[in-house]
Length: 177
Image (cartoon, rainbow, N blue to C red; front, side, top):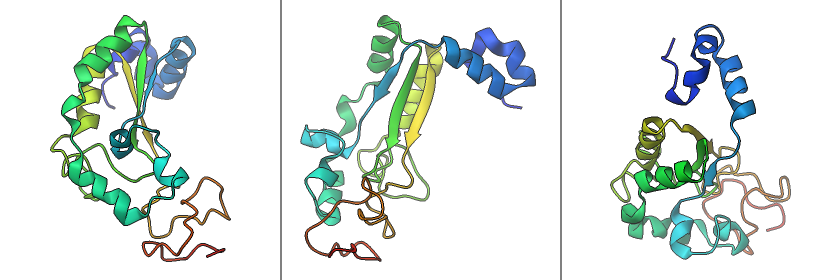
């Protein structure tokens, strides 16, 4: 079994016999934490749903990766702020609906290591561990707007953007296109 995570230290005995129960016990006492949204959309300065709401074509949106500069991402400062505010955990969007991974993915080249040179998930996870914060990763799978088989919006309202014309990335066109 993996060693007990530092943020669960108060539940180490329970972790040894039932990690799930230890996590639930911790969660019931956790209080509040930070939900951190960060990705290519951060460059546009609007919101994480910008590609969807503004119907930005996949190829155009992907070009944001070329200018992705995470030099302002400071995991140490982020976790210091969380600790100073009395938070007990950080939940980060490690891959939002745009499909851009914030770690050194071996299977997805559309990631922060290839575009920006850094594994931001590792950096944030390490700082959380050092400071005793729980670290949780939000990873979207079903709503990946880059995926060729992303669900058409007619089948799932939050699925791929409702482009006014056929999006060549998608293997199955929008039902209404």
